[in-house]
Length: 431
Ligand code: DLL
Image 1 (tube, helix red, strand yellow):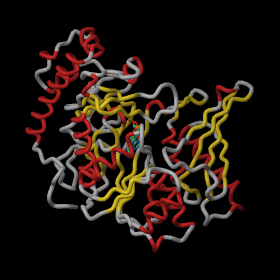
Image 2 (cartoon, rainbow, N blue to C red; image 1 turned 45 degrees about the horizontal axis):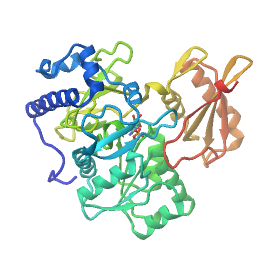
Image 3 (tube, protein in one colour; image 1 turned 60 degrees about the vertical axis):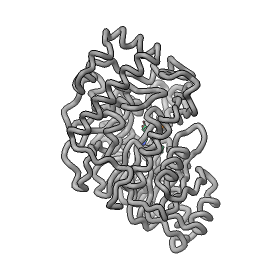
Image 4 (cartoon, helix red, strand yellow; image 1 turned 135 degrees about the horizontal axis):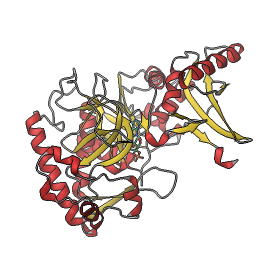
């Protein structure tokens, strides 16, 4: 870890609370004066900017949802005159219209500090080269990593996703110390490095990976295959600038987040009341200095919990747990609510299968069927497949209380992704 903090804030709780209150008051006044949509929401909730006099007053404010963003398409919740907008980005969503978010120059500058903090926390130096293997363009990922890397002062190697041959060539020729990618892309690259026997020719030390949930098995496979010193899970979303709302520290006990840039609340997704500290719920975010599209109590649908104890790393920044999944990832199977993460957790316990899985849902003659496809590891024997499938199926029955057919495929047979992996294939509507 670099001893000198160039980008990471060092605020005591009083200083942080004062900054948050100032930012909250500014944001509410700014949204109210700049955005007719926000003004209408506040009017309906009978709240005025002057009513916000303490941090506890945040609970008086109405929630903002993805529907608010969709309703205002193409430039929802815009709170500055359009001439102040210098860029837009859009979410990576594949269904319906994408959410488009607009940025002022100040927003871009805030984001680049957030991302530079990530590189600092990951212990990089300005001598390091950073291979950026995520999508550029409308998606925030590539541009976000690049902005932060340059602001931090390391050397960006902006490959984008895809083209495995190029990725391997740059890994061996330029010998970057750090790779930035999705969890799936890191796995794909690790598998390719292994297949081609290139381990000795690359010098990667660190991985900053995110954009989707990962399992401990997936992470271990990547770390071991690439012989990494360390890897860091990075959260983020288009609505809150992009990647880099925080980062794991070297203790790997949750994610430190930038509480001077946004307020994080965790609420019960049904009652919308705050949960007890440490309990899991939905992340709700209020930005403190975002100009183009400020967010006020934005319901992210991401599920996590606050880790209330101080982190052993000594950083003066609050933490949330890793993102456990999204409330909208939940599917209902024969009346049971299931998150893909629950299935992943069960699969984690079976050492003869890899980290990859795909849940397929079908409807036959009015009845729902679930198939879980997994992959046998190289080291395991195919002779044991049916026994193993039975064991996995029994565990699923015991823990999730549903019947699922388990299909064991050969090593590397399940689809790989260079972006975010799809874990559920729901074909029930096509009946
Ligand atoms: O995925 C931004 C990003 C790019 C983050 C690269 C990290 C690295 P969106 O496409 O808007 O933005 O998707 C945001 O992805 O609400 C989470 O559900 C999920 N997500 C992002 N990071 C993580 C992570 C980018 N580290 C949505 N772990 C979020 C689990 C993640 N889920």
